[in-house]
Length: 330
Image (cartoon, rainbow, N blue to C red; front, top):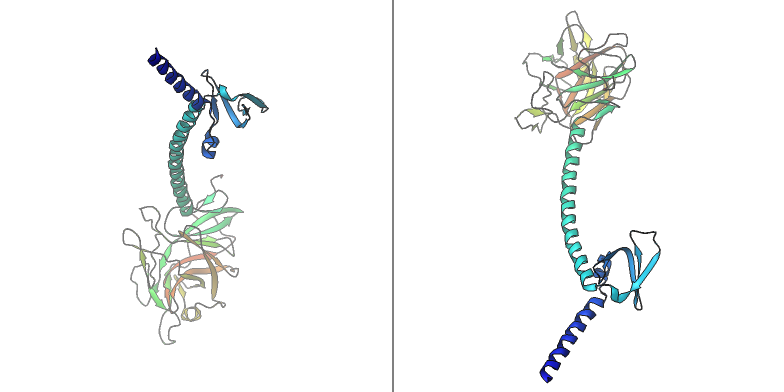
């Protein structure tokens, strides 16, 4: 009998210890903060937004009702089950947080790709974006409507024709040296209607197919694209020079070259700005242009210019240009 009585007392003590463990609320701040479901001893639960212990009662605000404080006896809560559930939720939360972090990383990568595409095709006016192509484009307005016009590079002739679109020509040549740049045709094919147009020069390659207006710029520290072709440098400066028309050709004269890069009646200085992303340079003349023939000239260094220029005319009464890019809303 004595042995059975001793065994009975052990069982009672074990049950008491278990009940005590179930009815003892946690005191660790992190555990308390992680509990949002109070699991009751009968297997039901209360989903709570806040809870606290007041004596032998648990006061809580239900997440499912009107937000008023409610309460129940502290021994009706299975604290062991409540903590176990909160711990499992925390582990799940960590998994969800990791998954969320991965999703944010993917979102950030997609946002970066979108920003890269946007930087390659930035808007110049609402609904009108630069193309993802190499070249020089100019923002013009025909009948008050904006449009982008491509400028073809004319490989000028500095005493000899090389057929290459990058030719180095000295700035301030000696007076006795013939250094005029000759352009074919009596006038430019491009007629702008604005007297202070905005030029956009590509600084890096666009798509893999280079068009007839592909830009190749020689500088003292030439950079190259993936195919080894020269690309424009953000260090380059630009001026707009007057072009003198002759019978069947046009020339940029010794007089004009001797005045580069300083502003005067034959040379107009510009303001250059590299657009976000580094794919385009915006070039704007500092002074309004009068009706006439012009060329955009790149300055490769303090004593050297690119003799391959981009020619255009300013004539508000001329017709529209071919192959323009217009706003998408049109």
